[in-house]
Length: 190
Image (cartoon, rainbow, N blue to C red; front, side, top):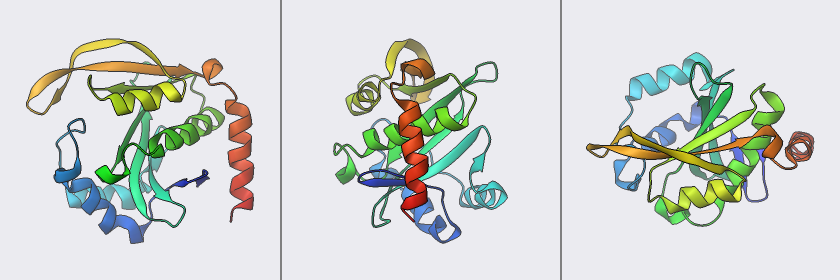
């Protein structure tokens, strides 16, 4: 569990499954930038029961407030088979949580954790052009725009470009201090 000032990143629990699935499958609140997909409930539950959505090279963490109200989710996964990198994915489930700094805090918690616990030297994220909120999150967290991958993803009925952002271990200023504080704080916040 990674505890921030206003939020907590934590693994899912069996008791969370129904409300997480309902939030993740509700296409009404996806917004214009999240893929319009509904996960299979059986596959969703099976995957959780197999590994708790957590393995060495990928995982899903829930974003909650300090009272454990479910706000969204973050994931990391191997960027590609040939890269020594992780890629981030993130989503807040309801529009009323957008624009409040929640995702900036969540990315700011996960990046130092990944650099402290994984052998990666790079973390990247992709953004559909026009998603200014996501671009601001990444920029505030020190990610740099590398370029545009043309027609890289099928989204909302058409092939769409993706902007590629990344941060390198040596660019993540203070990640070692933040990781140490996160890991030490997790011992005292219980």
